[in-house]
Length: 219
Ligand code: ADP
Ligand code: ADP
Image 1 (spheres, rainbow, N blue to C red):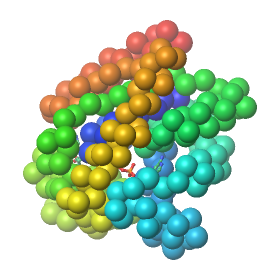
Image 2 (image 1 turned 120 degrees about the vertical axis):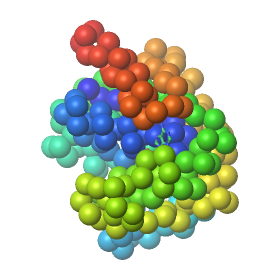
Image 3 (image 1 turned 30 degrees about the vertical axis):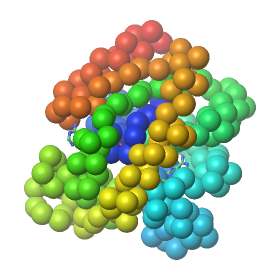
């Protein structure tokens, strides 16, 4: 399956993508994770991205599109993927269409997770992220078994620099202005599946599973 995951920051894309990948034996391709990895490694790409990311602004399209084009052709994505955090602008969506056409591929669906802004702020201000595997936790809603340590790989949990109140507000505005219009873009292609992202993590996952199983049955 080739899927896109759209939703505002904090909607639960990473949390749900991890479960989908495990059960459907697919892989997540998160442009945010790739930028964070490049920042950690101190690459040129990471240095370029840093100045935009800290304040919650989008990295310019040509940089993101270049990175995605280089990544998606790797063998681990040959049997499908969930794109998490890409595309985020109409220009990126058009570039993705072009790339898929060149590769002779088709998207199977666009999952849209919706969550109101007040809930997103509660989720993001208390999010903690693993330095090594990028899994996310919430200090109250979804805490790790041992405080400050990732359940999966014992990595250190930290607070992202863009999970601070000012940057969060900016990210929510950026989502409304630049990313939300993509729902209409994909609605025209009849690929959009809307999911209510409020509630228990397990219940949201069940709703996602039921739409994914429908796609599976139609293939
Ligand atoms: P995204 O990848 O969309 O930015 P995350 O998956 O990192 O979002 O989730 C954002 C924060 O909200 C994390 O702290 C996560 O543990 C928490 N979270 C995810 N899903 C839920 C949920 N259904 N209810 C409450 N908190 C959630
Ligand atoms: P979130 O938890 O807000 O969904 P991500 O991890 O997806 O965040 O992205 C973090 C930051 O990385 C964004 O605020 C932006 O600066 C940069 N970024 C990630 N993906 C993209 C993209 N497709 N286009 C532009 N910037 C991006």
